[in-house]
Length: 291
Image 1: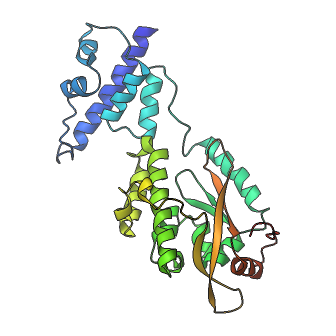
Image 2 (image 1 turned 180 degrees about the horizontal axis):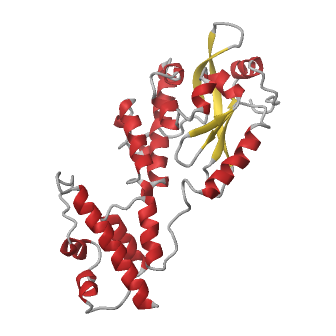
Image 3 (image 1 turned 30 degrees about the vertical axis):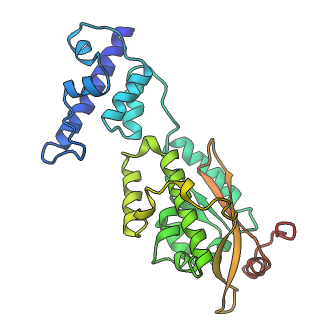
């Protein structure tokens, strides 16, 4: 059994190693990696050359397989396939699989019962649904939401959507918006560390760059001001008028799965002006004890 697992693991490692070599055959790697057997031996598994020639028959432990996966810049699926080949458990739940779809279905049912603005967010940060209260509050297109054209990077950073300009209308509001951006990006990097070579992750970074948010990417969240308020400010429209009024709101997440995502982002008023706006768009929740 041990020999079969070792053979399968070595075969998977070599397949991934050659795949990376082909990828960088016509362009240099940013870190000048060459993805040779010797380099893998030196960087990730010091018995690798001995394993290949049969001098060692000892299957690398799970930690070593994870180091190999890190060296080979494995995507989420490649990392788990490599672990499976060696007989080890995967590192985290699937981000796109059947379980996530089931959890999204449960979350959609819950979303439809809420009497307050709410959006449904997938593990890949796509906004997979929203109720009418949410689209009215932030003046977003229901069609764009239903077509899965907006993710959390867009929602926060895009200058083409109304949220960014309305959330930075004053010095204090801008500071809140920046602090939220830095904390959110830090959490994203921490929560999805093992997926950073995946296509969906790289596409999100491209969207971030497109929106001009890359300057916040490397800032540590403990660099933000201590004791930042739990609320955020935005200019919102009282339904039936053209007037934009400053309001304060809070956001909480209701988990619909085994982790934070998929989850439902729920928006609550944090002052009397917000309470008035929420009532104007038809929110049926009783916010009297929340302000």
